[in-house]
Length: 303
Image 1 (cartoon, rainbow, N blue to C red):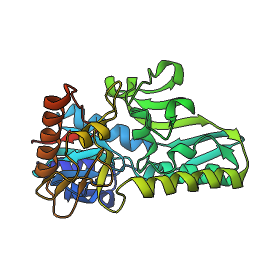
Image 2: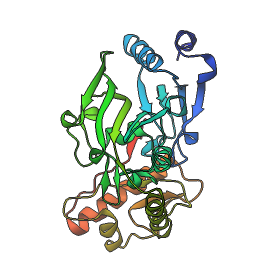
Image 3: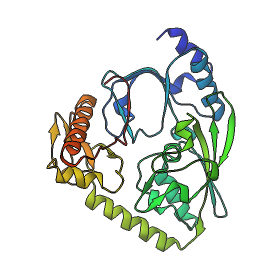
């Protein structure tokens, strides 16, 4: 990428928040991935819009990330600009039983602040290792709860550079999908409606969910959480287990022995290892049961 791209972006976002050849292994929960040519961390909505406008105008490829908790970046990295909506855009505001937060706010932090404000309804998200923006894009959920149950509206940036508000009714929220991903919108902020509750009860529920995760999920290893979407009428982890793939390994990547729905980085895994393992698992499950496993993890770069 030309030096001029860096210098022009530095007029939109300060140089301290632009990194050159930044390893994506530092920004994904898989802890794998080669370098992004430029890694930009906007601090305001205007900086997000300015960065996107620059990339579109100059035909520079770009990709939006949050916590990288659902992302597999190739070992060669990404030829373009990674725009991270992270802690620089993590403001959370609570008024009554309404919570408004910026896209970079961590779900765990929102859940804790809601608990402190004695608001219930967001406990399900307390252990999801992602940011609010990503959760809105994919209607994230866990343990019987989903984002669509609490969202009231989002503020989003369109590919044309317009900032729009979308009420929940128009978000077309489904299983791991929404209008946001289909129309390539960028979530900037979201509003959620919770309910007044008892702080001790909220804390107890969050603790119970945490213990369930610790006992059932391989949290001690880098992963991207549930690797495959739930096929209709089945559970991905059960199919993988029944196919005899518990502990199946390619390089440093492994089907978790603790929970077969998770592909983990046992140490030293490459993105190629993870991708190859996922493909092989999908092939074997389809051969044995006639069910096609669709990846929940998004791939970025050349595989």
